Length: 88
Length: 152
Image 1 (spheres, rainbow over the protein chains, first blue to last red):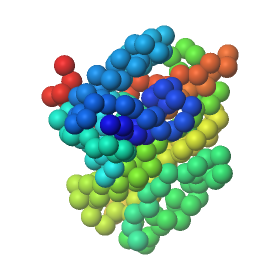
Image 2: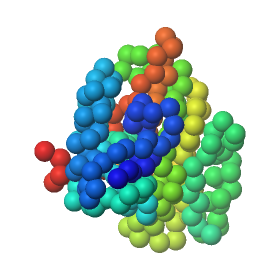
Image 3: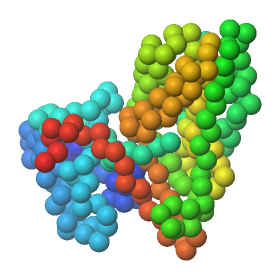
């Protein structure tokens, strides 16, 4: 299955586009997405400051609500990655 | 209408304190409190030339409305509140956030202003990328919205 990860803040380093398509095994959850991101970052972005991102980011569903690690993902679902925030 | 909350694309439009003052004006107000946050030219010893603000627009507006309604319920149900935050590339000196509160009394006006500022920093999905004089840039660290019990 594939999910479409909408990128915000520091996660935009992961792509030139606003959305990153990520391949995951069927029936994956947010925990699996975190593991996959950890792998992507260690393989391709080890020199960036993104090492802690998979651990510290929250994720929003399409309803803009925080979803927890056991949330089951659906094929083609849009998920937003929310790195630690700091407006104002 | 007693609440205005918006993200402003500052490359197209400016955040205006005059607009805010007009919005909160009322003969019921005994106090008006206005906070203006601006992009400054230094952070952590580095010369800053600009900040790019990124935002999850829908979630930011939801959070702004929730924060302002909570502030009213907590301090003054009749307060008039204006809240705007910058989005996009903002050079040094540009307004990044403007909070204006009209209330019956000064104490409530000050408290609402401060409450909104602190809650925006801790709840609203907005990110800052600083641009430095040497041409480098950097996303700043922030406050995680991940449930604390999940972070080991």
